Amino acid sequence: MARRVAAIRWLLMVLAVVPYGLRVLGSNWALGGLDAGLSTSTRVGDMFIPLFGFYLCLAFELVLRRGAELQGELDEVI
Image (cartoon, rainbow, N blue to C red; front, top):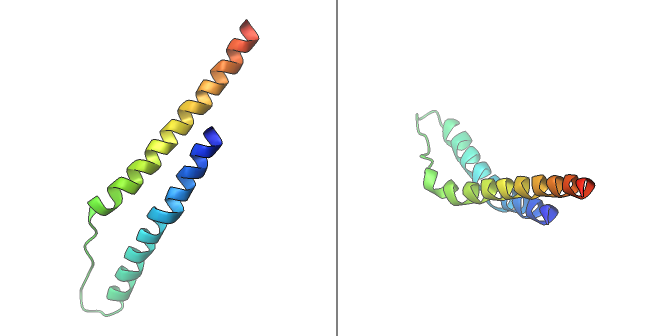
């Protein structure tokens, strides 16, 4: 289950976070090359949902891994 969550996390990163970041980086690079003092405004709301999903998947994956470790320790005790 933790592997599936990790796959979802990386898929979210590749499909949502990276393209947006590259688009903002390219826009800033292109406007910086014009020497006109222009800059793009990056809205935090556009990245909130993908980053929230990424961190939520990361936390869920850590909980699942720790739970599996605890289950292994309890199996040795019993």
